[in-house]
Amino acid sequence: MDRPVPISTFGLRFVIPQDPYAIEQWAEVRPFVDGRDLLAEIHPGGTSSCSSRHLLGPAANWPFAAPNEPRRVELSNNDCVTDCCGGTFVTIRRQGDRVLWTSWENTHDTRVPVPAEVHFDAARYDAELTRAGADTSWEEPVDTAARLLAGELADQASPKGADRTVIAVTPERTEPARVTVRLGRRDVPWTPGEVMVRELLVTGQQPLGELVRQFVLRIMAEAPATDVIP
Image (tube, rainbow, N blue to C red):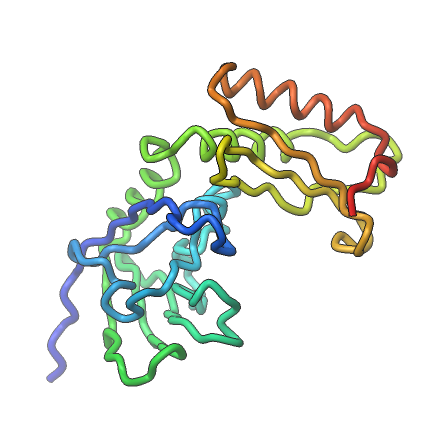
């Protein structure tokens, strides 16, 4: 007779990138199971494929959201696309009062053991997602500015007749820190030579909320098809 799978604890922690040249400059969101950094065990040196920018939209779309239908989720990568350099994957689904993580894969290194199956209490799992989504205590000023800016741009209607859309908001951990906004054509966003780039400097000399609002107003007031930086 099969023994029942015990219930594990689920946690999420934010880790700010230390490499200014890493592809992803939003903070990593790393899953912890029973207090252990799961990715450190099965993909040492890997980067979480979930970042703080993934927690800005509806909770149902977050990478760790647990739907009733099974969903394959990419957990980690090598600061590269997993089709190229490998990573780890798991299937997440809700079953009654539990959330199940099953069908583990490690395409980075098949020799590294992966968990057979992990179960979480669904109510506590959902509570941890809610807590992490509201947690800003870990943020540096550039992270706060990037979060506020992404939210303001998502809430703004595009100028009438605009042919551009926001394609990326990126915190830049330079000195001084800045947030880069890229806008591209609506039909083909990353058309070479037609990506408009704007930078918000985060110097600490002005309240971030007001700084972001003024910056967004300037962007929205610009002619949508002019002043393009290749």
